[in-house]
Length: 501
Ligand code: NAP
Ligand code: MG
Image (tube, rainbow, N blue to C red; front, side, top):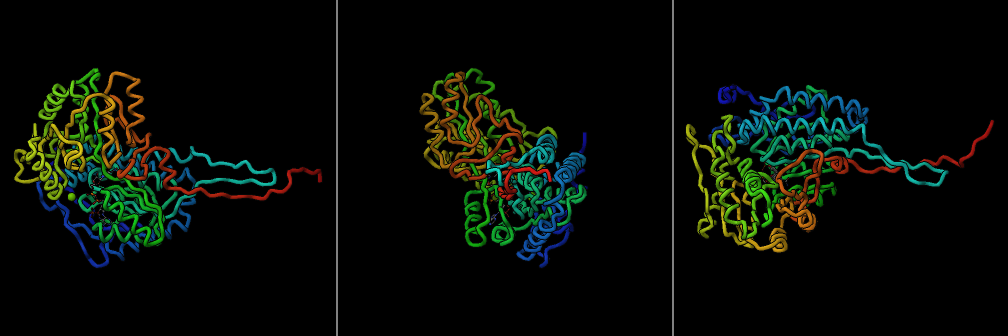
């Protein structure tokens, strides 16, 4: 078995900005510290892009776009290069996984089995898709030929959060690049390292200079500069609702660039009384909230359960929660790793304090210290019961391993309570009746509805939210709509007649 602690100590992460095909420090030499949530230790200092650096990256991206080196390259050439990038990601699986694990606190096992392979699959999937999409011909009179083609937008700015750095980055850059755009990526301050490794691999794969740039930095500085840049044609953002709305303001105050937002959630796991397999349901409910220590935008943080199965289900969920191995992300046996930062830990504990004051904590609710680690940000799987769906615990996104349980009676009440949320990212529904499942699934206001499962997903289906959960959709072939614009080319071909001249 690999000794991941030794391997992590030997890592030499790239920490500079990647602009126009080269790694370089920030113009003004600025850096920020990158800590590992595993033990709170300083990992490295990372170059912090300022406005001038973002401007250089955007100009390089725009120049590359206009040159046509990528934007007008044969689709099969773009496909070949992106497939090579996907292969390189898998060839570098251990290093990418280790960077992701030490930087974000994901268990190394998840990083190797989920984060890196899924990100690599996303890149390959879009590479394979681009020469299988056809454009349209409009039904003009015979004197004309009108082509409706999909054209890349130009420069896409991608701004991503820290909870699934590689996966969310891949959801955005793969379709954007495949469609022929140039990209400037602003990773989250907490998790820049895997993105910088990706930049190195992208160059190695043959993505031309300027086509893919990575500008780590502070949100209000580098993120804002990207959001306000007049040469950026689109921002694709995943993160918090407040910052997402900020990007709409940046757009309105600059060039009116498109903005696609993927924001948070308070996803309901709805369990009706006729659920056939409560054991399977409890497993899914527990993993649906505790995976990645609950730092999942679509995490199933509300359990809306029929009172007739409430006691048995909550007991079972607590039993699953107890059985999960919480610990050092660098231990392969670990199932639940860390909260990503001291600040996020504080936020989670604020909510557990509120729930404790309301007498709602039935399991967990505490910070813990895994054996052998002096520090680090660990919270045990936590269950709050008897939660008023309309209160803070029922409404606000905690973004930690905390499940809020609310009892209801019947399917109609369950769906009504599930929809009583400002968010609408995902929901699940457990029932033994296909009729109930179909009706309820149509009524649930969420971008994804799972029936008798949770978090079953793949790049083949779209992902995004209703209501305050956002406006954009990542994944699936529909993502190409987000990174292209329709162009009409109307050609006067004259009267449709032939001569023998
Ligand atoms: P965040 O603060 O909104 O940060 C997201 C990104 O925006 C980061 O790169 C951040 O940079 C940048 N940013 C922050 N302030 C900015 C500003 N004033 N102007 C421009 N850019 C700015 O969110 P987070 O705390 O990283 O992530 C957690 C939140 O994201 C949760 O609410 C979660 O639900 C949501 N989320 C949603 C989805 C989804 O698909 N719907 C997925 C994951 C997460 P810094 O890192 O430097 O702050
Ligand atoms: Mg970090």
